[in-house]
Length: 309
Length: 244
Image (cartoon, chains in turn cyan, red):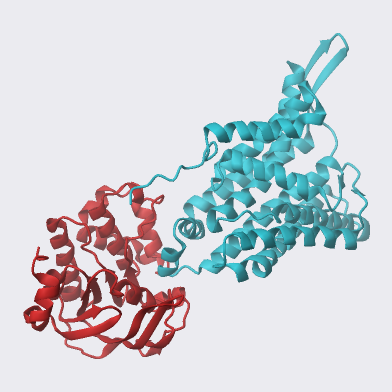
């Protein structure tokens, strides 16, 4: 039982990070119908910016009060990562809008390679460590097994990650469902031509979608650095594939779906590693995806395209 | 009806292509302030293409479109419509996964939000049916309701020029009458300028002050609504047998 609860907490933490990245995939897919394969690498860039910012603040500028440092790091990395997301769209996707469907997909893969190599060259290929910053936690349960006692720990780090994700998700859902910007985004998603006929600047709305996705990926990047303590130029690939899987599992184009998918992928991975074998955790996650898609082709919360014309 | 006759929209020699296929072969027409102008023509004549070309999607390859004294031929769509043109397009293009209210909010995207409630009350007065459906998704409305919503959405932007693309298509005669009455009321009471494209020639010509006939991307005839209704060619091609 204790072991189960512990795995549940770990899974939710990991799933939160996947979910935040998955939103970027799902929103971009929703609005322009393409998979932004460079999104995982935008997350990686976010993690690097967060790490660099953290080191600058603590070692160069000598800040010591951790909450303030983290807040500044969060804001700065969201801003810079958003700028990256915007640039990627502007350079690699917008010029190809109206071209054949595969073209932006190809540049997306190209962009992914460019970003990885850029970071590899400028930051080096070796992993960058960050000593654990937030330590300690709450012991929720204590139990004993034949191997000794087992503690269920909810670390402060996990609390921060889960809370931040919940707050961001709530804010984001409100933004999309209630504000004029969110409405414009949904309108572009459903009928871009009509949106422009109503005075919506479609290009700008698409850019803003990339910016929002990148900002959330930056948050995920910061969490990743703090949680795992090591990053390298390649972390975007697997995290990106997982988050993409999460988006598809939840129903690509659906915002709550992305979050649900993220949590499920996180849980599947953690439980599989906990009860079966660590080696096959990715296989488990992808197998579940395949099975779900056989029975629910549009994902768990995706809308099947049945509409009255 | 307004007595002012200065030109609000002037289309000169407009040619539009879809790739290599020519859709408009040099169209000239004028819409004056306060007028209802209609364009009738068969399927595929290029009527909807003209409507969309006015809004810059696609842009005209040759020719000029002057709106309110400004050349809008090559402007991006969102800038054209921000100058006061609203369109209820072919196929209605209701946002299917948005509620009626959200569709109307989209129509008012460029309008000062403090005017929203007043404008909303106005379109609900015009189309009371929409008020009953306010929280229903656009995609679940009937064809007639969608058409009302498309017109109401266009009106929410407080347009100076209203472009209506086949508002009667596929609708029951009673609803067509409702919609045409609404258009006439808007024109007479508020002086709204309307450019209406129709296959339903009889109703459109009766409603309009002036009309044009389009055949195969060309304007072949023009005149007042009453004149065109009397013309033998018009009767033969668009009215006999097609009269509702």
